[in-house]
Length: 365
Image (cartoon, rainbow, N blue to C red; front, side):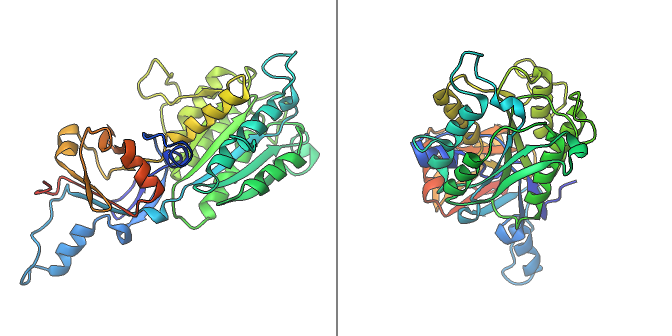
């Protein structure tokens, strides 16, 4: 279980209001990404201060047990987004139909790495982008599995990532679970700073290294997605064809957000949204930007919080108080997350230095 002293936040300032605001000035954000924080950035700082005084002269009164006092150094919140791209042979198929001049592979390449408008080019100054392409040659019977071609995440990484894409082409199988597991291992090994997330782009159902045919790899893929969530790494899934079963896509989306696997988007309120790729480069680019945009201006809270508490709380951005419900203020996204909105989100992601959130601490106003 998570503790107050070392909490893996369910959503830091996450993957892309930073992205979209940096590129387009769009001002609202939402969703989850994992970050580790400790008392060194202010969580529990009021409890620590009270304890240090130890009841002596000028001691602070004992803090409210339910007080949430969070101080965030925004410079440390630059997000890491690892793109996990299916390199299976079917990615060479024409898309969206057999007569289309573009393929699934070329469509994704343009949406991600197009010099004019590709999301990586747009946001490379604000986000640590990395990429992992995955396939196999008939599973373990073909040797190493999964076969990975990758570039580690870094700022200003467009040239390295797009150059790798240009050197590759669709290959063979789809060991999604093994590839995802590998990416989670690598992200966990990195020094933890800002939020980490994975964007999985795939065009078919998963197979395994042990059994590449038929495609029976959904349990392995789900286990890897659940492990990513448990590690505080948000997973978003984008299906690039109708070959991937909608139920499988929905389950992967749910697993990557810690939701019930059988929850259905549009039916169950707790379901995560599975994404189906647009038919055009422009449409897919907009989708990818929107997927990324959903993360960045959301702040995870330390406990369940209701609207009344949030409205009475205090949120300061570089010393300026934000107003609850204002278009350029903050609001409660759900019981565990606040969302910074409008121009406040833009300021936060472009030049903000410190965000302070105090809820349930008394005398906030």
